[in-house]
Image 1 (cartoon, rainbow, N blue to C red):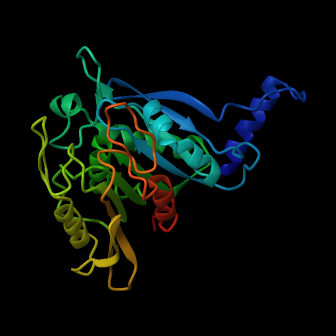
Image 2 (image 1 turned 60 degrees about the vertical axis):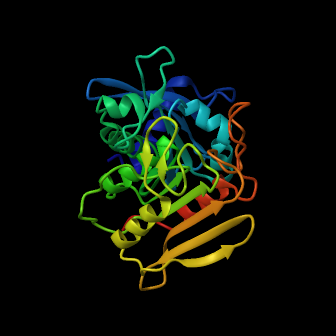
Image 3 (image 1 turned 30 degrees about the vertical axis):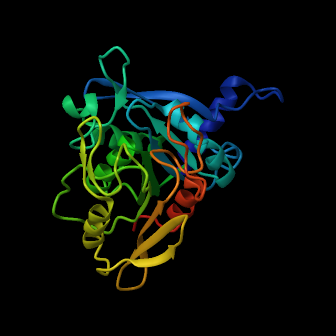
Length: 307
């Protein structure tokens, strides 16, 4: 891993190569990049905080954000306004692209287990992609490897659960949105995985109470997923009800020390959408207005880091 001295030296060399005049622009803080994993070209978007090149001492937290089936890195960033939250809060945001299908629409998806679409049917190794992406980002940029987090929408949220099970040594916490877990996790859980799960009771694409959607994919009920993770995290058996009103319900699972390791919000408005985000299409579900996913996710992530 590069040291902070190495990275600062690299930045200094950049300035020497591009000139020292007052009009010399700094390197871009928002850009596209790619890596090759298992012979596949994998692309992603990076958004560095506004102060990144002037504040070269501290290491930044990083949030990896996974789009849903048919979405993309740029779609996630645009519709959910996640880079605006990253800039205001001072963390690095990274938006990977799923592999595009060979169909007419070239829909992108993630191999989250038993869902979804091209990536699942073709056995795409998305776990290796995200693992290598984490390694590259923490090696190349001022990023704290103990503060790497993952969030995702729909199929991206399902992939988030799979990453939590397979890359718990690299991920400090996860936040699935409008998703369920469709992957059978290994029996051994090396350590607790903090989880924030956001969902709408009106979701028809990933039904909150479980079942199959119009495309024929089956999804386990969200309470069974979270209770399963509560056991894996050595939480107390019964969730604590924090809020229960006409707008939303909030539940928390704690361990024996009273630490909240799982937090869950289920809203009575919205649908299959990113709470507080934009309506992605004219016929798409309107996002919940009673909670804001970006604020809740970052507030939750800040509480955790790898040991």
